[in-house]
Amino acid sequence: MTKTIMTVDDSASVRQMVSFTLKKEGYAVIEAADGKDALAKLNGPVDLIITDLNMPNLDGIGLIKAVRGNSAYRFTPIVMLTTESQDTKKMEGKAAGATGWIIKPFKPEQLVAVVKKVMR
Image 1: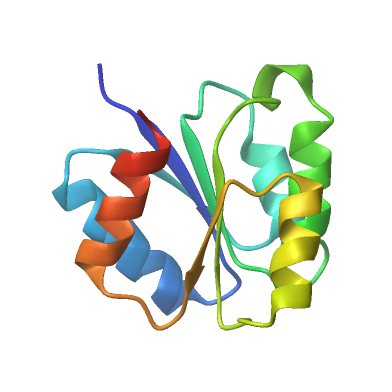
Image 2: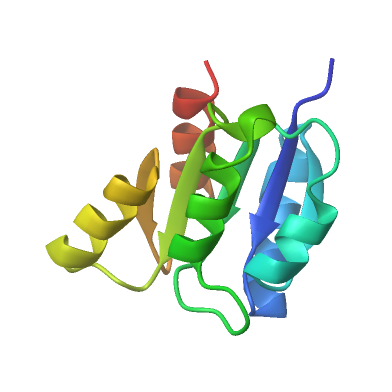
């Protein structure tokens, strides 16, 4: 069965790059422009969420907290894909429920390796 991954980023080019990379590996991809859009589209099985941190309407931390508050997605892996690399931001993400953290710009093979690791 095909695994479904949601990518959430306010940058269309980042969403396209993540989507292209994952589709090439055989994953189904749902794209969302920000946290609010992601929550609206989160209405079926999703095996992994990859989200940016800094976005309009609802940021990555807010999205993670909302997703973790939904029992259907409480254990869904969530990876932050962001330019932020400060330990305080990483700790905030982890406290909210983030599973992992990837710094932009990313290498496609790095993204795929993290995806495979967290979706075991």
